[in-house]
Image 1 (tube, rainbow, N blue to C red):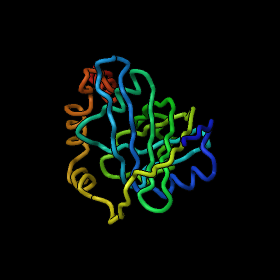
Image 2 (spheres, rainbow, N blue to C red; image 1 turned 60 degrees about the horizontal axis):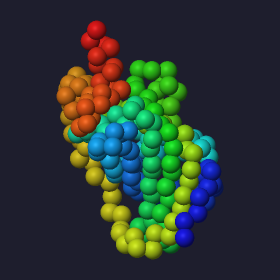
Image 3 (cartoon, rainbow, N blue to C red; image 1 turned 180 degrees about the vertical axis):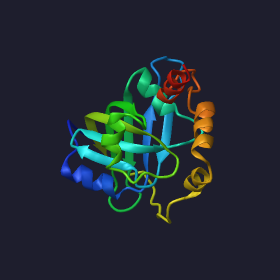
Length: 189
């Protein structure tokens, strides 16, 4: 029942834009490393072209996707129809991390509403798009965004956020130093 495409088609883009949540999957090259799947809410995803997407990544308790992209670049996005006709859409590609203070950040950040706690932009070049039926995905109703993370970040100073990221976002659970960790090491030296 699945169909494979080489790029995001206009009907895929329309479907993606309607979704209130998406999931990001990544893993390290190491066979015994942890596979990570992260849910993403808010209006943080941008489609730049039929083969390029990016999302504004907010400060969280871990930074696995960033570490995995540094390790091997592989990333998968998954979108599910919780309302309307059933469908699952996945984007497979190679990504990288764009940190604040870089020319790439200055170029990409203008496409986003910068939210409290923004820590990086995850950019991906899409190689494969796959749709599948989604027949078993249940219906769910959207009741609104949680603002807990944004409130938490808004109540922190920039120095507090930097200290938190240094402690929680510099090294993955598998011991991979993230680009945030690299920037702290390079900044401290």
